[in-house]
Structures are given as C-alpha cells and as structure tokens.
Length: 466
Ligand code: PFF
Image (tube, rainbow, N blue to C red; front, side, top):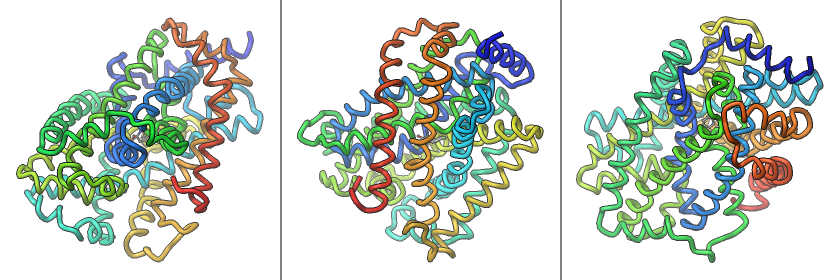
C-alpha cells in the first residue's frame, strides 16, 4: 500500500470517530461563517477606500478567483485527504522537520489570532449593548471609543462575554454547535447587510461614493494595491490558518469541493462588497466626499460610523442592525478559530473535546486579557513599537500567514503532488479550473507569498507605507 492509499484508509477510520458536517449546506455556511467576519465589514471597506476604490475591487476579484481559489482547494483537499487538522495533516506525509514546522505554524496562527480577534469582538458586544439601550448619540461622541477601550475593566467583561459565546458553541459540537449556529446566523447576516446597504446608498450624496467604490480608475493603481488586496484576500478567506484544513477534514467524500469553494468565495466577496456599499457611500454622504475620513482605518467602524448613523435620523435602528450583523460575522469567525485550536489539541494531545476546548479558552483568556490591558492599564507596553493587540495582528497576518501558506504550497508541490490533489478533488468534482490551479500553486503563489512577507515586514519597519 503506498503512502497516499494509507492516508486515505487512515482518513476513513479517522472520519468514523470524528465529527462531520451533516451536508453541503451546513458545510458551506460554516466555511462562509469563518470567512465572513470583521475582515469583510471593517477591513475591506477602508482598504478599498485607501487603495483606489474600484481598482482595488478589481484587483481583489482577480486575486480571489485565482489565488484564493487555489489556496482554498489545496487546504480543503489536504484536510479531507488526511481527515486531520493541520499538525496531523502535515505529519501524515512523513516525519521530516519541515513538515512538523509547516503543520505547527498552521496550528499556532489561529491560537494567536483568536484572543485578539475576540477582543475586537468584545468591542462589538459593547456597541450592540449601547444601541440596544438606545444610546446612539452617546456611541457617536468623540471620546466614546477611546475611553471605552482604555477602561480595562469594561473592555475585559465584553471580551470575556464574546469568548464564552464562542466556547459554548464549540462545546455543542460541529453539527449541533457550529453548523446549527451558522445556519441561523448567516442568513440573518445577509438580510441585515442588504438592509443597511440599501439604506446607505439611498442617502442624499451617496451616489458619488458608490461610483468611487465600484468604478475602476487605472490612475489609482499601484503595486501596493496588489499587496494590500492580497493580504486582505488571505485574511478574508481565512486562508493559511489551518481552518480550511480542519473544516475539510469534516467534509464528506461525496461533497463537491470545487463547487463549495466557488460558493464560499462568492459569498465572502459578496458580503465584502455589500459592506463597501454600506460604509463608503454613507461616509461619502456624511463628509461630503472626504476620502481621508474613509482611510481612517480601524477607527472607521467604531468612531466614524456611529457618527454617520447618528446623523441619519434612524441612528438607533440602523446602528442596531449594523452592529448586530458585525457581531454575528465576528462570532462565526471566532468559532472557526476556536474549532481549529480545539481539534488540534484533541488530536495531538489526546484530550477530550471538552478538555481541549477548556485549554483553548484559558489560553485565549490569558492572551486576550493582555491585548485588552494593552489599550488600558498596560498602555505603556510596546512590542517593536506596537501595542499588544496590534503586535499580535501584525505577527499573525503579516509574518506567520505568508509563511504558513508557503508551507501549504510546498507540501503540495513536493510531497502530495498535483495528481494527488486532483485525485482527491475529482472524487466528487469536475475540477474545471485544474490548469489554473496548477499554474497558480506552482509558479505564482510561492513567489507572491514571499513578496507579501517582505513588504509587510518592510512596512512594519517603516521602509515603505502600506
Ligand atoms: N476571515 C475572517 C474575517 O474576514 O474577518 C477573519 C478570520 C477568521 C481570520 C478566521 C482568520 C481566521 F483564522
């Protein structure tokens, strides 16, 4: 029996004892739930505004359909082929050191993202609470956000509430927890997104913003447009974080990997575009077309938008709808991070699911609390000149993510082989984009990943501005 057959038999045995999704719909919604998150609603619109509006969107779409597609297919196929989460999946192909490292880094990234992602999730919890209490005007005040995050006690409570919510879903299991929550929350999210976008684009003066966001202007193109779009694509599709390997390991052999991938890509991009339509035209209308406000970055969602909502008359209602949607999006993404960490610990250390998830909870509470304090009582702490939360964000997305994606590509090129991937995908798919998959994974991806890594580090060290 050769190595690949052995893996396939092993995987079948593993599947018998393992959780699986009940079917395609549950799987797609769970993967889409992981993909659609703060990245779509908070990060995508400000990056789009910063990097030229329509041209950014065009570059993003091209990357998503080529690069994004290839990476999703690779990770899902590795997961389904081995029936394991990242560490086990990589070591299923041998015991070489680089395989251990590749699996290890894919597993460590989600453990480092979950805590700080949950801190931001906690901020969203606070805004939901304020809008539910009818405090739209307070939330729109200049100092509201700053004084909230520097109050370590309140911020910590919000963070803990968010992490616990994710924990409870994980305890309930893949089918009864992740899938059940995704099935309810994702359709609600779409409805809320459409309501907010329609409201926003119909404000007086909003049409200019719609044009800026949707119509490409080639004069706005720069190489940084590509670098920023690429980084965003990885983040938004939850790539290179072991998540799709883990979710792929729960996928049944008869599920069509290619079709699912296409659906998830479009779902994720659709929500990002809707978020752009919610935010860019509204801010345009509010500021009279001042692009600088849109480029504000992180503060856009928590400081500028509440002001925009408050000025719209229906501030409380629309603020409620908007932040509730953000909360759903953030929660399903956090769940996917939590699940990957839990599955890795359960598989590698042999603990039960409950014990494993408790370990993840404890690590998250410790690291997340450090991030919370970094904006409050520990605000004097700087790591490479960054606040604690920003440092975790930088370390995971700008440094570790390109490296872990690189290892996924090398695993495919050097060990599994394109035929191995094609065999797995073709168990249930036509694999129409196979030639493109081949070219992207073999020639383009490793090169581009190194460029992202180099440019992110250069930008962190202040050599270039991204
Ligand atoms: N894809 C999610 C988003 O766009 O917000 C974020 C995310 C989830 C990133 C899970 C990483 C991750 F592992």
